[in-house]
Length: 180
Image 1 (cartoon, rainbow, N blue to C red):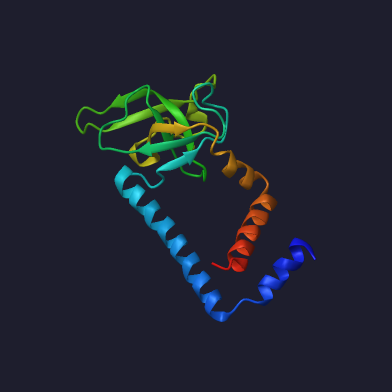
Image 2: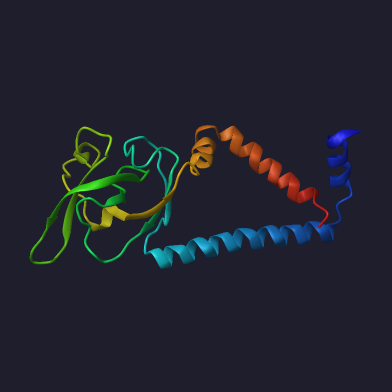
């Protein structure tokens, strides 16, 4: 009969108690993942403790598909640090290096100008209209570590949504048909 026939027979033999158990287990897994994410947000001080590099603008230091770990403290950003920032009007955060920092003497606040290592010009063209500096509220965090290439999974699922749906469907089918 084959794998498909066995899967159909397995789905037909599911009992209500088994479905409830699997649903509760799946709910606990999702809840645990959310709790871990929120805990990481509290520990790192950033709304997004992990980001994926989506372009080649930071090569050769960071390549497309690298995962960056972020941390944010009250210390001012310094020139040379890798920062992840979000500007008004853009949904996707940008990973670039702080190249100039202007510190305001009276408050200690800093204004930051960024540039991708692989880019010829600074990022003023990426900022909101009329904006020439990033401020504290734009910076999501500093890069404190990375995993090379692991983020390709995210990039592939974003660029080819059919793969994401196939993967989710296969995992759902696996959960439904498992007997444990």
